[in-house]
Amino acid sequence: MSLRSPSTPDRRAGTAARRRDRERAILEATRTLLDERGAQDVQIDDVAREAGLNKALIYRHFSGKDELFALVIVSYVDDFLGQVDALPEDGTAAERLTAFAETFLGFCLEYPAFVESAMGMLRQPGTELLERVSEGAMLQMGRAVASALHRPIELLDEGDSSGEFSVADPDYTANAMYVQILGLAHLARVGNAVRELPDGMPWFFPVRTDQVRASVRSLVRAALAPAA
Image 1 (tube, rainbow, N blue to C red):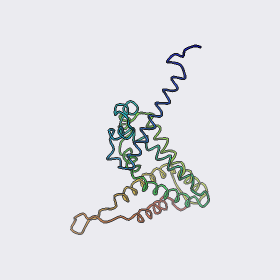
Image 2: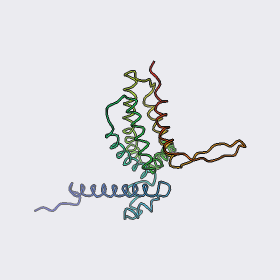
Image 3: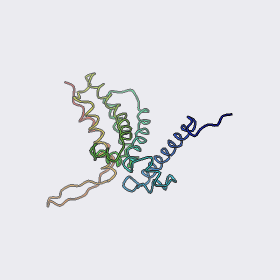
């Protein structure tokens, strides 16, 4: 019977599997903490404790907090797409687009840490992000967001092609809706907005979730111009 050398395919496969398992555990720990505390209160030390790993091991797998958050967005989007798959296929393109937008808002309200993480990524120019997030992680996050945008782009194309409504640029419109819904979800989470009093002083007033939901429906209607 021959002895296997440490560099045999079986050994390498086992090492790769353990690495994937550790990365999965780190991302699951990050997601757990984000859901419990929110993005602002999660640090690498917290992730290490939650995953039961040494902090140095986190940095062996990921470049830092930004990369962890970018990859956790992929996990959130996967969950959201499961909800999208359950949406009805009947109805007009506008009705299905509204259902999609309302589902996305509902998901954002359920997972405010997703909103924080996604908006955090949006605030940073791509060149700056690449200084802290690997190209591989950026690609995974980009693919996830593109997957989330696929359905609204498809519905915008369908409605425009059929003459139900007119949309000059479905790709841009879908991206604008995505960002606006993230902003509305953040407004709902904060729970208040600001107005100017007659004397010029600012004044806060409450924002209700039902107002935000109505705004999403208005947002969809405003994006769909009547067909010529």
